[in-house]
Length: 292
Ligand SMILES: Cc1cc2nc3c(=O)[nH]c(=O)nc-3n(C[C@H](O)[C@H](O)[C@H](O)COP(=O)(O)OP(=O)(O)OC[C@H]3O[C@@H](n4cnc5c(N)ncnc54)[C@H](O)[C@@H]3O)c2cc1C
Image 1 (cartoon, rainbow, N blue to C red):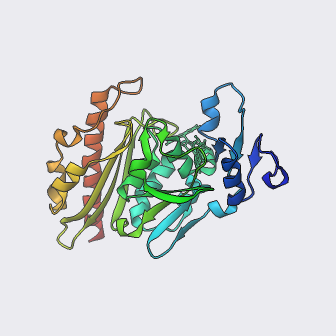
Image 2: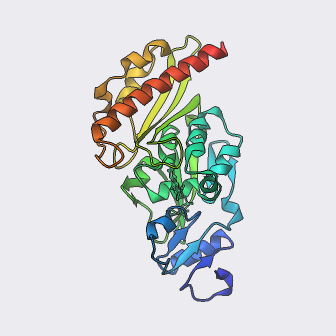
């Protein structure tokens, strides 16, 4: 790897020292962005990594979790391990639980949350928890920067709205969407080092009567793009938490479109995430019971 500032042509792999250098390389023509490389390298199988490669893992400014009055910001070089270690409000506990189940410790140390969403796998474990907190992505290019909701950034299996000359610099989580407690449930064929059959993230806030004041539920690996269950959220709002699990019905999952594959048939995935939602609600009920 060569220092981008020492080069006047960007026709090879570069480890960018800062964001300006990265943006300049993107402006000079399409290149493959490399963060942790834990999706990029396996996707090559036994082929070499050719073409213009922009390694952003050394940009210190991007390895920060910060906050201002409006939002939390998770930089593009922040690893899953950084997320686990960060002091964040309880609404992020679902994201932290997802982080603890991504691959192995080695993967968690190396891989980034932003790489997970940019790779746009339907089974990306970071996406549902971020959806429950109305997360947005910040994109930057030499043309300027823009912010768009994560829910519209990922458009399909391995497809995003990122333009060739743009990079994601951060995930933004509005503080207004961080009330309550976050939860996460992942079902795989085994506990670790496994691609999800289905996963559910939930963020829940109850009032003093233990009625649901705010709820967000998102499901992954059951459609091309992870999705919020808006209809179910509306049915649960205002209901006593104690009877919420009984409200969950198959019709609330009708908008999902899982695939049949070696990991599980579509019908099993739907049954599994329906059960996962009930279990998360039960877990929330028992947490509140213990806290009393
Ligand atoms: C053994 C193993 C186990 C795994 N287990 C899991 C798991 O349990 N759950 C799970 O969800 N994933 C898992 N993964 C997949 C992977 O580790 C994650 O998706 C990880 O978060 C990707 O992050 P990365 O930094 O390595 O991304 P990279 O591989 O560096 O990049 C991934 C993609 O995002 C693009 N990209 C990266 N950063 C940016 C940016 N800032 N702007 C624009 N584009 C960008 C890259 O160009 C590439 O297309 C596993 C992978 C391995 C090898």
